[in-house]
Image (cartoon, rainbow, N blue to C red):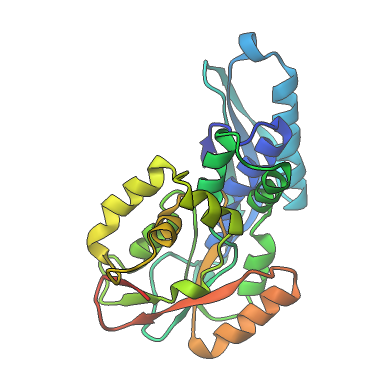
Length: 283
């Protein structure tokens, strides 16, 4: 179950993004979403019914794309608008993926570029162009379905989707309490160009600073590491991509398959080590 306040102005797009975000957790576990229920908190007296119709229509469109049936839902009147879904999916008991299980030598593959939190902050500040708004909106509304279907053809040790904790926060969860470390080759991490631009201007969400503070003891970086890139690596994402752990011998083939199916910015961004236990080394 996942729901949140609007991150874009267009109600239809908000519905699309919220639905894609809620479905993502099932894909990250190797599952197939089948049914969903709407969760709505809505200020009916101040906003009227039409924005709500658009939100629900956007969510329904993405559910249709995911071959997921909407069974109903629940709504409450609230002063602050919130929307999301509770999703039920299916997965074979022996094929469930979790966010732990990485093996030394595994590569990490990321399927979507980073930077949605920073760009959304700039949108709220009125600085983003219509082209940028459209691009980041479509990225967040893109399902992880195709990436998950491709992933199913490979031996995957662990998987998670990148959301509110940012890339480094979710990697920290993958190795926390294990005897493994992770090295990230920062120049290989896909990043939206606009995120670098707006990050340089200081449009970094509060969540990125909180993520950094919470995991600062686990992250090792050179003294001269680019501070803007560091913020991007901690940037809280909405409906981010999958982070997939797989054997090194499969990583190139997995990325090629993703590219061939239109997931063009997918990339191998790092690898798992037996050194630096419980640490993330940034290069």
